[in-house]
Length: 209
Image (cartoon, rainbow, N blue to C red; front, side, top):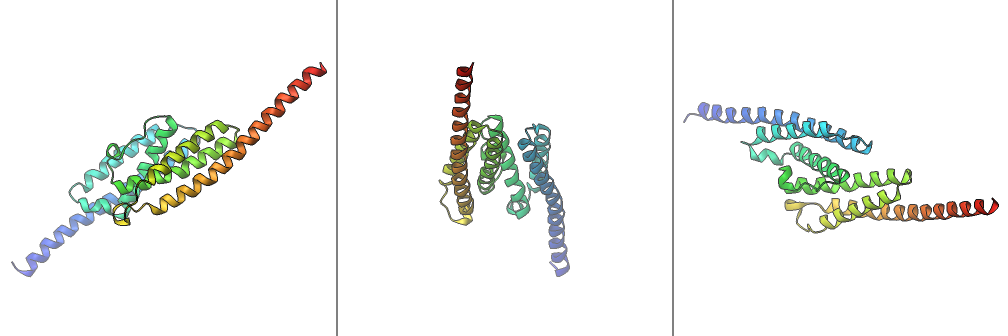
């Protein structure tokens, strides 16, 4: 085979991969953007069912595009899309009271799933803080309980970074859980005190009558 033929063959292969990469990059960016919007909608008390449907369609497109180039599944932009998809799907399920979707159900890599569920801890903390600000201490306590569960889940994975590098996610989750636990405890004490004062005022009012 002549060098020109070899070069043509390699160029054809690389041209195909470049075209696939461009489509995959576009789909990945769309997924990240939609996932961010879906999470914001959940925090606002809205149901992002339409956004989640669009995300799943984009995920199917992304997987179809890279199906013949499996090495691309570990590209940074694809991994970011998978991670955001996991975060949005898991957070949405928790808020709805549905079962948390597994890695197989989402169709993503183990690493992306672990990183995505690790980020859910931050979303749950944000949700817990919002609940405390509106006096819903019980709801905040439930969110804290879920944060604890996810942290315990993450701590099961003590593997080298090449297999499941989640050490940073574990450290961040630990910090967020500890901070939130302290804040929820303070909020619960304040809520209890306000309730007792309210009951006292009611009894005092009845005596005056």
